[in-house]
Image 1 (cartoon, rainbow, N blue to C red):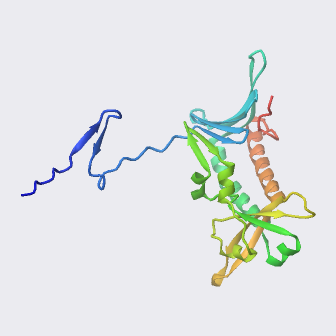
Image 2 (image 1 turned 180 degrees about the vertical axis):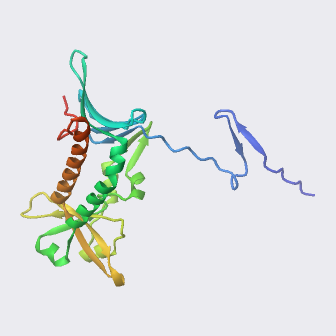
Image 3 (image 1 turned 135 degrees about the horizontal axis):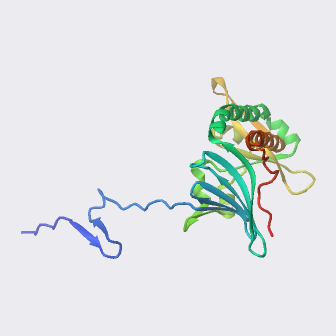
Amino acid sequence: MAKRAAEPGPICSASRGLPLLANRRRFALRRKPSVIRKIELDDLMIVIANHKLILTTKGAREHVTFHFGPASQVADIHRTTTAADGTIQHVRLWAVRHESLVSAWPAMSVALVTALKNCARPLSIAQMHRGRVAAVVGLVAREQDIWNITTVRRGRLTFQPEKIAENAWAPSYLEELFSLGEDELFTILRCKDRRKPRIIGVGFALKRRGGHRRLMWIAERSIKNVVRDFGRSLAMLGSAEFGVDLHRSVVPRPS
């Protein structure tokens, strides 16, 4: 008579102190997601601290802080500079009260989206051929692709250029761009006179009534102008309340 196999029961891992169950079909251990405390973009670093974001570059003696101000109800941006003798200087660049930002944000966000929509222009395959324009898909990552092109180690999120390159692809025929999803953008590059390709904008496939799709694009200079105007609106909002104006460049300069 065959012996009945012993039913699996709980065991304990002394090394981790976590209860494990032998029946893994019903129970499984899941690692807690890493808490991101720092984001690295080449030389640029963004540190995520309590109620603030710190923007700095490698080798810089200064950093810029965006403080959300949960206690004071005032959001502000200030620059911190450390001199060679260790002296620390703080300069406020911009500030705004929460209530003012909340009341002004709906109109500002609508203006931002409207401005970007107005910058979009139709893009035809014939136009791309005449202008010797190429398209690369995947350089602008979708939300679901972020974790495929980054690594997280000890709370530090780092973008991997080689993974970004692996995620990018160029269509064999430009007509393939019509089949892109609504959340997929393609980078437009101008290739002339054997020079280094230059990014001139981003494009996307727009689904129209009847299921027809149309290619649209926004020039890089138009995006910069919209972002600049939006920054000016924020600067004016802070200047009206505290008499400070947002600096043209808040990116710390290397020492």
